[in-house]
Length: 213
Image (tube, rainbow, N blue to C red; front, side, top):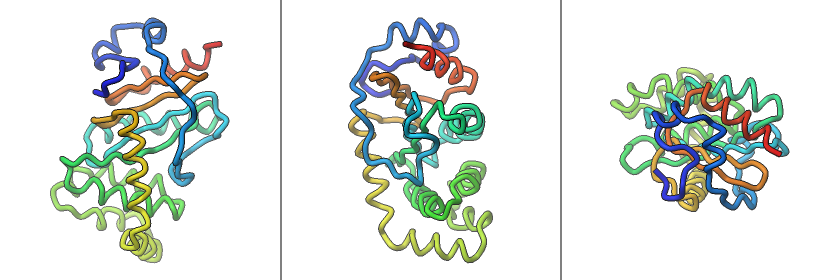
């Protein structure tokens, strides 16, 4: 849990307490603007009323759950409709041996416009490559040989590492120490939340944020 007062408590508490009460009790924090955003890992309109920064680790089971169970509906209903600007932040935890490697491959794929199929493959096959370390093979299964050659060149080139480090530094600024952690920005206030979130709860929260004046 990050040390700042989070918008929500635990998942169980989130399910029991109304979203409106949670917003009323939230501790406003500075939202002076987000920095170091990789446009290949950001989705939607920069002018959206809500900004979501999601700090993720590709080897994290909770990040997998958030991506597979929530991300598509979030994209369809809020990101593509201009309501949310979604920013992916890499936050590979030291406890996970292959999470940084997976982040490199995902970023390389993003540069080729292949974010969704590669992230889908990485998360859906998480348990497999977590045991074998074969992130390369997991990604190769969903890209053409030509695309995979480009991805491998980018991974080996070393240019992706500073981008991952920048995201990690932003996470440290927010005192992130677990994944996933989502930082919501809306109307000059910032609400951090640690843990996976069901789409239903996320939807309630976003609607409350969007209705604020």
